[in-house]
Image (tube, rainbow, N blue to C red; front, side):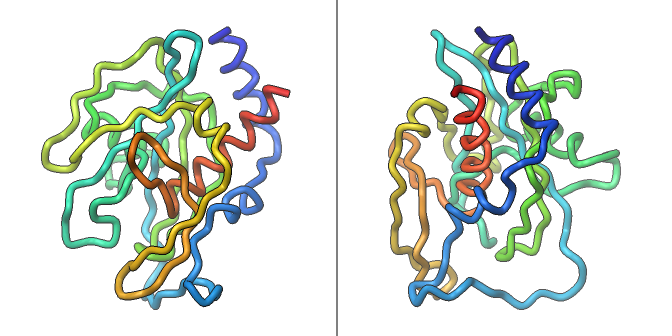
Length: 209
């Protein structure tokens, strides 16, 4: 079952992706309904994040993390492991896997990569993010970095698929935001992370039909 799911997912990832159509279903907007805009200078920075799949008792999971509070736009948010591309990263796949090792202590090799989702521009932090999907052979031993990670949450694909779309009013950087979200444990997962997850779930629905 494990191999079958991963093989189907890999084949699907090599075909045209739903991209913005699926991402925008979870896109936050201002309370007035207008698109969120920020002024930035220079080209966007590059980064990578990882959906690290593993199977336990017939169900599939991947880790999310709650970031520590810090003076930045993603302070305290729920996110996938990942971060900014460094000069020694050959590509954004290496970025995502390196950050997964640094943040969660997970040593995932490029041979475990199943494929990539559509890139996503994060307007709040001026980043172009490349989401990587990898499959781990068993439930991982997660060792979170105490400097960056407040808590780790294990997202269940089945539970995410069974959730109906919900929206929540948030106050972000002085703006009233209306944000679609997922619930994982007791945490609200919104913004770029929810947009990436939604594209992934769209593919899972396809290969399960």
